[in-house]
Length: 433
Image 1 (cartoon, rainbow, N blue to C red):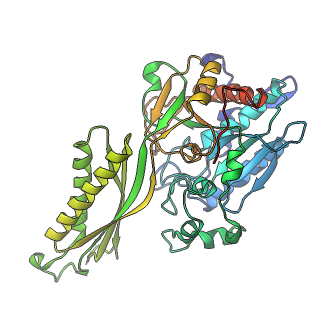
Image 2: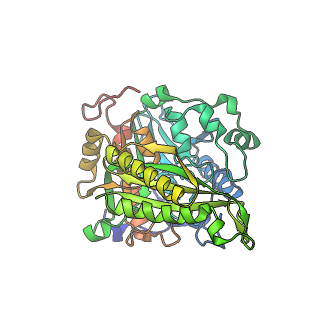
Image 3: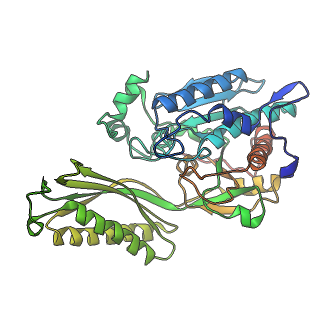
């Protein structure tokens, strides 16, 4: 369907109410507005994210979907076939949490588009032979507990339950404590790789992060791979002291060493073709204006298509940070918080979906997603919706209304093929966990 032929706004098709992506995003546009940073700040289990979760449950129930929430906070809304079978389900969805000051589309676009896709499939009279599950994964961005895709990592066994529950937010609360306060039992948190292996496929729609589709004059693309990436915490320790009484020659200032380390990350990444190195967060202790810090923590994000290059770059950062810290009379410790290897999405599934969307280009992405975590256990694909500026994780993130609607139509097309095709189709081999 051409973009300019996609209706923008709720419609009724053969007595079935079909919401629009634009109208559903409008429902939540005031939730989690960050008046300091701009954009949205919706950390997992914050009041804003809880409001979004309640909104999603209401939307799912309005569509007659059966809703359940697991111990780690993943919400699943089931559209069951007439047979009532729960096996061999097709999974779609995304997340509702955000980075600090994030855009309106990263996460919510995938969730909203999945709801609209359900409407479209029903309007088409589709009778699924296997279930459809619309999921909302918690803590995809890692903005509260520091580990991206935390919910899907727990589900896939990619992080130990003990480590996940012990993670702390900036207030010192553990993930276990936050789960308990929100009505979940941490003792019930466990991986479910067997359940993942029983899934037919997972398709995640996401706003494009980076600029490619606008130059290709296409509204949607299929994903091919996700760059390997990880997060590391660099802790630089010095001597806390008084800003007014400590002579410059007597200082062991970790902030100076940290500033030099930030530049080193940039320079080392620039010297590594294809790499990305970013310091997006820095936290001095104790953080007073008239205090020389005793410690500075900074978080480093490193990415490259080849995992061995990512690891080598991190080791260069570790060595350079140690040298810089010593020159400033400080010490430096680099700790890995998360790492995801480069993920190549299932090529057989992608080829099957490409037959449904023959004009869609196939693109890789440098951004992490729950799809990248689950791809080791279930045939997985991604669908990207054009972002004309390429800007993401920012209030300037954008998708045109027509493109957003076209993305939901494309998702419905893919889901229809997966929900109604033969379960033993040779184009979609089964995997083991």
